[in-house]
Image (cartoon, rainbow, N blue to C red):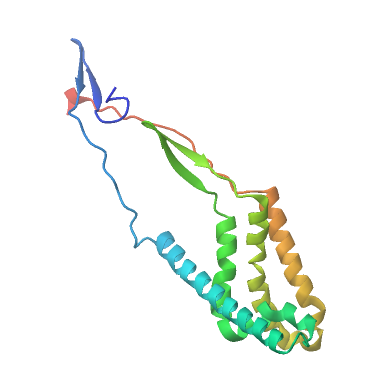
Length: 203
């Protein structure tokens, strides 16, 4: 039983005069931590920090805006409230941090979730698909990149920017959401064990 769960190794030596089956001593499992210096781990940590920073700044600005609306007793231009992310993000957060937040969404949508689960002594990989509404919300985060592109393109388009900026954001959101829902990223693995036998007599 200990051989089946991986605590002992079983080896069979087969020769011309017979076969010798040997079983090793009990070997405990060894835990290996993830190397924090690897690029995926480091990028994920920095991205999380950047996303939390952008979220905190935008939340603070939203609270200040709500207090301002209440103090004005609602006498504000309602259409300007739809430009909060676009204006406050570029002015108070900055294009670099907005780009970091916008690029994390495609990274998450293009990564299939694979979880390692242990049942008794058997270990299996399970794929957990994100719910459709989380996929749509994640696709909406790509709008931050659209805001940056529109802001840079405003130099050339000038007064025509208002004609396409809202449509570009909605189109990018729709395209990313549809592509992610129709063609989800899935894990693919093959098991191809290959054994190499050494000729002991000729060495």
